[in-house]
Length: 79
Image (cartoon, rainbow, N blue to C red; front, side):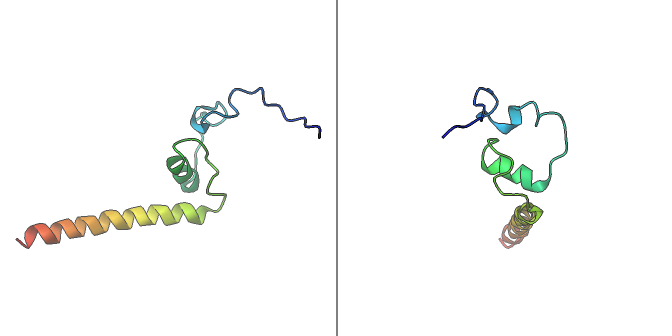
């Protein structure tokens, strides 16, 4: 088997956030942001290209924050 893939690029196996192509101040979507968060900056396409997954995690985070705030208000004023 003969492959023409070039493994000599030093940025190939490094974190995505330090690659020059990624670090050019371009906008990323929520799906890429969550993928970077879950992989600790290693991959920005781990969750795929469906933006619904990013929206799901964003809405889950918002729901947890709201529920925690409501719980804190209810349980601190009940005493």
